[in-house]
Length: 102
Image (cartoon, rainbow, N blue to C red; front, side, top):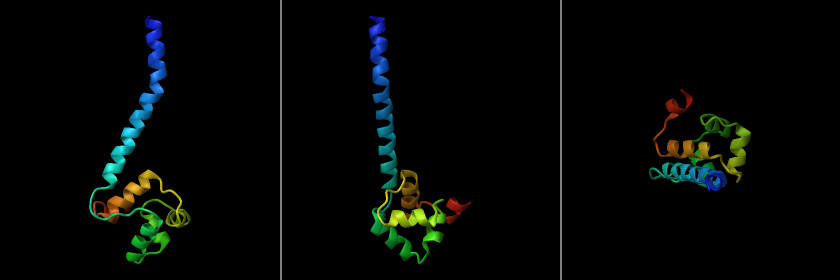
């Protein structure tokens, strides 16, 4: 009986880990939606950067991203969640250059 219970726990562990990962992803998604500025999708990323009148190298460097990766993000490559979160917080005024570069 106890052995069966341990086997059930072992089998359930990966799914409980996945559930924790999914909860963490949902929390990041909720944080990323703070504020009024919506920066999602490659066109919006490019438009936001251009509205700041910055080169790709200058804009993306503040988030720890190379110019070439920033270019890929602006043309449709998926943005890593951590970078997406930083961009959203920056766009909404929750982070500034001092926070990101300091």
